[in-house]
Image (cartoon, rainbow, N blue to C red; front, side, top):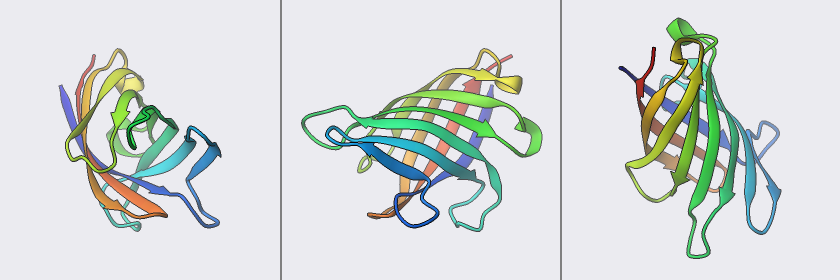
Amino acid sequence: MTHLHFFFHGRFAGPNATAVLVAVPPAVIVLDDPLRDGPEASSKLIGKAQGLTAQASQEGTYLLMVVNFVFKAGKYNGSSLAILGRFVPDVSGTERSIVGGTGKFRMARGYTVGNVYIWTASYFVLELDAYIVHY
């Protein structure tokens, strides 16, 4: 089992936007967000979160998240995790399933626990813990 702790940074606006709204309604957002080892924008880049989220409820901001965490540095460089699950921006401790992986995470299973560190209209940072069983 491997435990990883990192931060998922996203930017909705500006010339360096990493999350782009592509369809409304319901909202569908395509992501190519940095994964960093800290909450600051200047923290070391360790990978990318690439995928999409879609509004998946009529009762509030409940999103379906389908994303690959692609690692680009350190021990897990070239490996990835496939994440699937519900994301609720205003709830701490949101869990998502790890449904697969590549490289050092081949045949991965597990889960992530995410907490909102920063959430504004144009920028967000999620603190993530990933608990991964793999070969």
